[in-house]
Length: 272
Image (cartoon, rainbow, N blue to C red; front, side, top):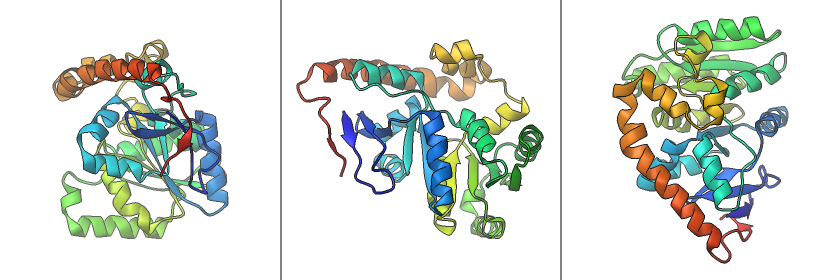
């Protein structure tokens, strides 16, 4: 369904509802511009890039659905979701992946706003930061951090992380911890820096450093990036992509097709 938006910060952004989750119908360039304009106005926020697995989780886990609903911007990070939105007659303008935003948002921020890299494998954030600094003149890295395994259960470690972030006062924080850990951490930490923008970027730091190879563009465009990842990490990803993801994707397409045939499915209304 296509909706209007009732939030003052987001009222100009149109949107689409897919399986009861709101997606902001904007391009990646518009998303970057929105973040920069908000920062200039002293307003922070949180971008969540929703892929097929995230959408599946919002339909099976009420806590995760509430978590996703808290984000300032929910954008589509998955070609299958673009297909489903088009099938139900409410197309989205394109994919916005966290692994792309670390480049486009960083490039636009260079010389204006500082960036903080949080997460990833040991040393990955630091190496990724150096690569970004070398690539984008004037980029300010406010800090990097790779928290140890299990840090989220350690109050002392969380307190130290909060203190480092408060001292660094970054404008943009990339959180690379995988889902749902990165979303849970953002929900917890963003209250200490409400004027900053937060975005979960998954494995993106390893893409930047080349430790993990990203799928070629043609594979991404065909919606088969998940298969490329599955070949690289079959044990870790088989259940997520094959056992859970494929049946959900089939059901999503079927529901989208049925929705298109229902009277009023595309009727505009406000989200409450």
